[in-house]
Each structure stands twice: as structure tokens, then as C-alpha cells.
Image 1: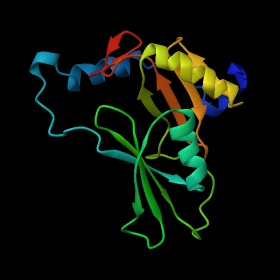
Image 2 (image 1 turned 45 degrees about the vertical axis):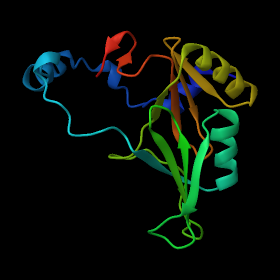
Image 3 (image 1 turned 180 degrees about the vertical axis):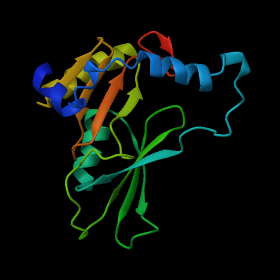
Image 4 (image 1 turned 90 degrees about the horizontal axis):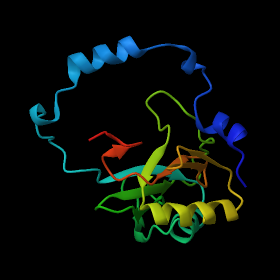
Length: 178
């Protein structure tokens, strides 16, 4: 089931930022900070080791990511920082991992978008995989939002926003971002 109007409100910010023309500001940022590709220094990073999110139900999270989205579970062990907490990982390709913790008995509240927090997690998949996973997500009754016929937004098992994007890594809507 897809309801683009209602989903847009839960997935994209509703602060009416589209009414502001910030083109001059963005041009100034590019002018001051964005070096041409050949002049950029090499990054000091090797890549994303893992992104860690919170889970209220380990089994539900595994069934969602491994069962529905086809991201294999790669490891499960105790969180070193919190006795009794589960730390578990999914393979999201290219040597990157999506990790989750559960924090039993901490009484964590529901997902909330906050400054410095997660807006959404975008995971690149092949176009044919995107089409298949879109059908699976919608068949599971999960509300979706499709933008530009390459981005599929939906909520994960604990309300975390996920985007499956059919653009290759380092590209977005035909533009280089890497």
C-alpha cells in the first residue's frame, strides 16, 4: 500500500523549507568549500564500518532486515557497553554493516528526529533488486513513498526511516555525490 501524500509528511521534513530560496547560500558554500574532483585530498576514512541503531525487538528486526530486505545477518553478540544488550549486524554490501542494539529495561522512547540524529539511512541496491524489494515491502503492508522512481522511503521496525535507492554508490539522481 502506497500513500505518497501522507507518507511524505512522516518521511520528509514538514517545516516548509521549500518556500525559502537558498540558492545563493548553496552557491557560496560550494565556492568556499567544494574543491574540484581532481583537487580534493584523499579521505582519511576507509568506509563506513557500521551504523548502529536501536531495536526494541531483536527477532522482529532480524525478520525485517534479513527476511524482508534480504540483508544477511552476519553476527550476534553481547554489547560490550551494556550487560545483557544484544549487538547484531547485517551485511548491506560493499563491506558495510548495519548494526542494532537492544537495551532491555532502559525504557527507551519511540524514534524521534532530533538535531544530530538520524533523518534516514539510504542503502543502494541494484535497480532490479529495488523493484523486487519495493514489491515485497508494499506487499507486507508497509507504507512507502517513491521519489524520482529511484528512491523508496519507508519506516523500519522501530520507526527508523530507510531509503532504498537504485542509484549506484556515489551518484544521486544522475549527479555525482562522491
